[in-house]
Amino acid sequence: MSENNNGNTNDHTNAHKTNTVAALCIAPSGVGDELSEYVADAVQVIRDSGLKNETNAMFTNIEGEFDDVMRVVKDATMALVSKGYRTGVILKLDIRPGFSNQIDAKSALVDKILNERNKEE
Image (spheres, rainbow, N blue to C red):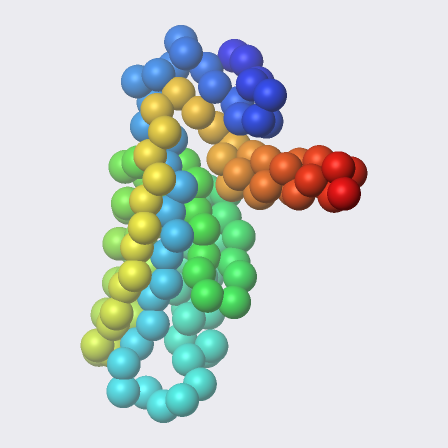
């Protein structure tokens, strides 16, 4: 396993692993203006999954093996669908075989670049 100068962890011996970062937004339709209570139901499923995750104002990011991430996406979606809500899902995937810890590494790399730029000014 090696860490390159961008902070990415890459294990070429595990290149067959399909590390996946998902940006996921799940929300019901037709339930009013405030969706946080419903979104919390989906986020609870994600947090209970054991996969690395973080929630921000627009999305919840999830990281793990492809099949595990997709299972959690389905389970979180079904948390609302099973209650009879029409549910919208926005999903973006970044699949990087052999890599891990991308949720942290990606933001750390941007921070590093910005810090270097600020030093140059």
